[in-house]
Image (cartoon, rainbow, N blue to C red):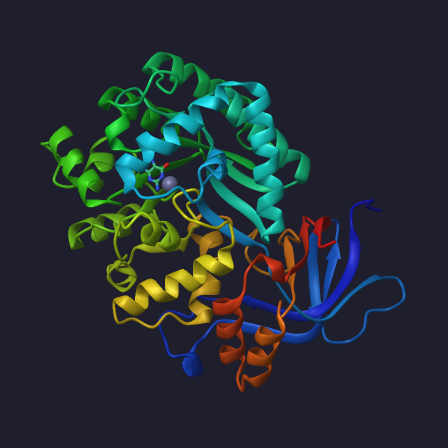
Length: 433
Ligand code: GUN
Ligand code: ZN
């Protein structure tokens, strides 16, 4: 007999069984839409889905007429950067120096770190995001605060101490030995505890020495299941700088390869300025690109070649990259992804976009048996959405004649105002007032 959450949730259930790819909507595979069905939750996990009303033994949660999806997975986001989101007038390197580094320095203060982590995690849930791969700061206390907050909420979270031993201001630099001790402590305390996993977090090649990257690779190799997260080839000035710093490397991505940092648990944000050899390296290593369209537009970084990446077999997931990105909403991020691809002459369907933010991300993170779908046995991480937030949005979705048309209008016009409720492992963690 379990005391954990046990109920049946009614709504229009949408999830994916496979990657719909870039097929036209009418021919898309892998879309599993079960309107007006019941999601059965037992012991915090999905116990099944059925059309028939469950028997009287089940507590009923009636979200009839709402769109019910697995909670979103944001594969790249910076918790302290809610303090600098929407900062004017710079590209990446100037943005880091002007806004981001000064803000991150404040996270040495435990009070700032705890308040920041709590604000961030509650905001994720209020945007329908139940799992994330997160950069806190270089300060150990910022990682502790984030993991502790995620554990209290039962969330799936991947994070780690940011590594920076050069080209960063005072108060944000570590050194190889202190960083190694901090990482080891944090791995021992948090990695594999509940739904938490540790990520060796090399901020990006310019702010780590070779010695530090080698140390990170050794820790990753020594601790099975740990991830690696970093940034790659986001901005042209950044790419030029990396070429100057690592003249022996063939490319920016090759810097990480040479340091032993690429494997199937590596999450690399951006990848706007990659070439075909890089894309092959992504496939061979199993690493993923966390495509961050909102950030790429806001910081003027460039237009990610999603088709090119997938054409070479690279994994691509979707990320907000707040505070380079301007919203924690994965819905807004998907709408931006569509526009970025439109500028490249590619049409991104709502199916492909929503897959990338749910099951696709889960698969790339090797977590598909836990998150990203309503498969039996997955954790019941569930977001309940209205189909419309305003009368005009209602008007538009009501005119839709197909599921794809309706979902595409929802994704293009929607945002976090649509969220009614969010559940993490079957426990309600957000409810709109
Ligand atoms: N490259 C190195 N650090 C950062 C960061 O904080 N945000 C983004 N967008 N790119 C980075
Ligand atoms: Zn980032």
